[in-house]
Figure 1 (cartoon, rainbow, N blue to C red):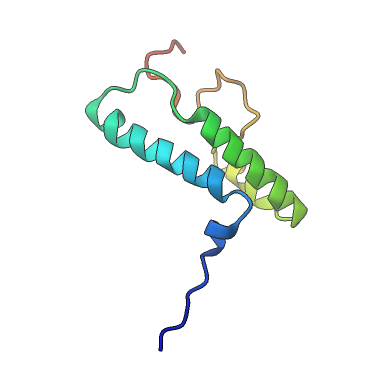
Figure 2: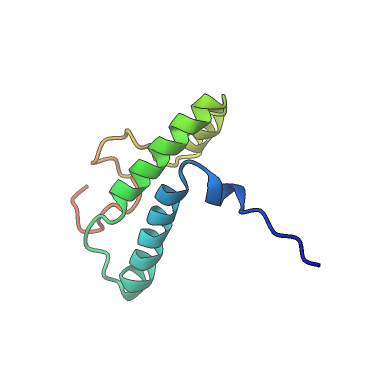
Length: 97
């Protein structure tokens, strides 16, 4: 007899839909544009910010915000950074720096 598997914690998390939206957007951008050298504008920024804001809220609820602080310490952009920040994800390669 097979046991029913529980859904993974990421699938049941409060941010699961936002995570899926970001990953779908990223995978589509990567395969359809980046790999073909068509990286002309910012992509998936809204999805990333929504997902990160959700994570931030729920990590704070569980007193785990130090993980987001560590993320920033390693140079990953936070949702609140300026739009012209060169470390921002998916920044257009054609924008002036």
